[in-house]
Image (tube, rainbow, N blue to C red):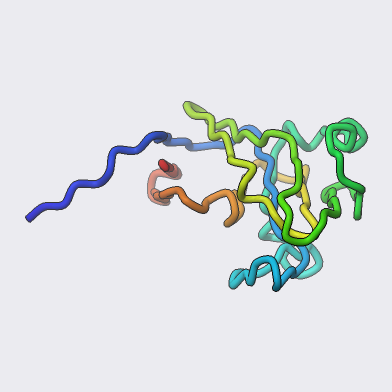
Length: 152
């Protein structure tokens, strides 16, 4: 008997990403969420930055901070963190990933921690989408053709 895959509500193939914004849990909050994967720690995991994007590299932190209702925890050239109450969902701006041929609107419900960080690194033209952004979605990587596919 053959099984059929569910019909995706969103599907895309993308060889490149022109812009990416990502939020991740950057400090452990075990009572909130016992994350099995590594936490974002730029001192240790610099190669695993959850958001690298050419356009957002020029994002002025002050302009982004003005959209937030949370206090700033840390701000550097490549990392911007905000504090929030543990166990609550921070009120963050809408996050949208734009790819060649597709747009992925990320739900805000996947953001909850005592600190939420926007990581942007101006180096290179590579984009890495963090594990929070890939939750509840199917992702297929075609390394031979330098493409990936996603659907919910």
